[in-house]
Length: 119
Length: 119
DNA sequence: ACTGGTACCTAGTGTTACTTTGTAGTGGTA
DNA sequence: TACCACTACAAAGTAACACTAGGTACCAGT
Image 1 (cartoon, rainbow over the protein chains, first blue to last red):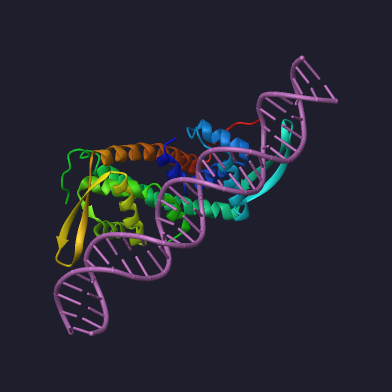
Image 2 (spheres, chains in turn orange, yellow, brown, blue):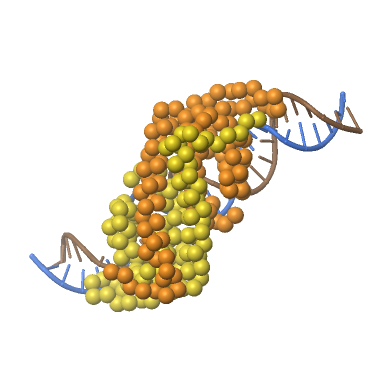
C-alpha cells in the first residue's frame, strides 16, 4: 500500500470505526474483516485493536465480553453517548476538510500540465 | 483547533499544498496566508515550511529565489513533472478514501443499510 | 535605535498507523 | 494424546507528520 493512503488514514480511521459502530456493535476481528472487504485490503489487524483500545480508554465505547464457539471470547464494542458526540465532531471536521479539498480538486482539475492563472 | 483536524491533516496537507502549486508558483509565507484565509485558520507556519522542505528533497518541486522589497528573498516553489504525478496519486488516494467515508456517512444518516455479517 | 511586518529555518514533542511477535481458546485430524 | 489451523486479542518498537517554540534576516515607519 502506498505511504499516501497510510498517512491519509491517520485521523480518519478512528472516525471510520466509530461510524461502523454507530451502525451496530462489533468486535475487533469482525471490524478488520469488514474494512478489508470494503477495499482497505491491507489494513493491519494490530491497527484496529490498538485503535479500539484507545477509544475504549477515552470512554467512547461500551464493551461486553461475549463467548464465541470458535475461539476466545469476543470483546464486542458499542458506541455510547460520548462516542456518538465524538462521531458528530468527526463528521464536522471531515466535512470541513472535504469541502475545501474538493474545491481545490475542481479548480485544478484541468490544468495539471498546463498551468493557467486563476483570479 | 481540535486534535481531530490536526490528525486529519496528516497526509492531506501535502496534497493540498501540491494542488495549490499546480495552480501557480508560490512561496511559503504566501501559502500559509492563503491556507489561513481558506479556513485553516490555525495552521502553523513551521508546518508549511517543513512540508516544503520535504517535497523539495523528494524532487516534487522546482525552486527559485526571488528578491523581495519587504524582507529576505522569497523561495518560490513550482510543481514539476514528478510533483504533478504525485498530485495525481494524491487525488486517486483521496477519491478512494472520500468515497468510502461518504458512503458511511450516508448509510448512517439513513441508518437503514447497515453492513451485515455474522459468524 | 526600536518596533512591527515580511520571509525563512530548525530542534524537539505527541499522536497515530504499521510491523512483528506473543498469548489463548476451540475444533479437526492423525 | 499431540499437533495444527483458525479465531481473537495484546504489546513493543518504528516511521511519518503536524505542531510548538523558538531563531535568523531584511526593511519601513516612528
